[in-house]
Amino acid sequence: MFNHAHSSLRSVIERSFGVWKKKWAILRDMPNYSFDKQARIVISTMTLHNFIRRHPSRVDIDFIESEQRDPCLGMTSQRREEDCSFTAAGVEEMIALRDIIADQVFEARA
Figure (cartoon, rainbow, N blue to C red):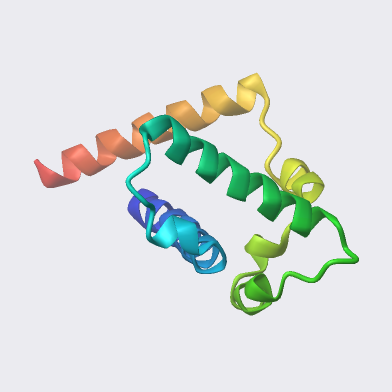
């Protein structure tokens, strides 16, 4: 179950990066810049992407198809915060659950 959830999340992240790299060609074929400059390029494209996504008057055609396949990609940051709000108690509960699952997986393999 943990592996399924982890792989599902990983798929969403990989698909998001794929769409992002499709939009920004420089990310596909990064020139041989210094690490610092490459990091600034990544941050700049993220900033531009977020600007485009946050201004409804601008349609980001590259993401329309992906949103239709995966509605989580189309969530606003406010919606994500509402759906994914974490409390200290909730975090501790998830850590405990993770440990229980890990123990059960280990015991099942032994």
